[in-house]
Length: 112
Image (cartoon, rainbow, N blue to C red; front, side, top):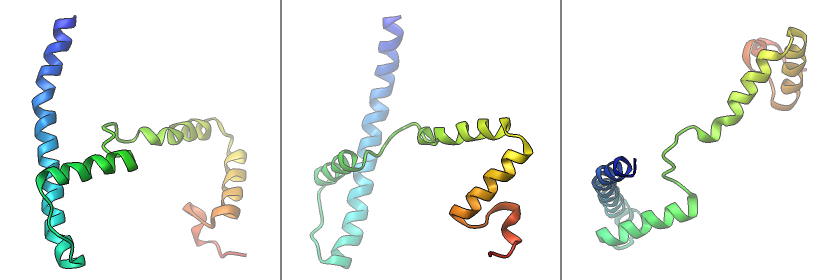
């Protein structure tokens, strides 16, 4: 079992290094293309681009790998919606219209 895990890690490492290098070159290219002409800033090197990439990871928490993990509320809401009676659904729609304005089928109704 440990051997299989080690093989998977060894297969992943070159792809991770390649991805980091490509992202570094993309950041460097975009920076050197945009910022000198827009703001008069100096071009950056590849290593500085990697530093900016790392800084953005630290500050903004990007590169999360699992897209949609933050959408767990949607699955819960769909489950709740499935358990509602038609009267409860209409009551919910009415309450949401009061908070968020018209949406869905009732969008053609005039606002009071």
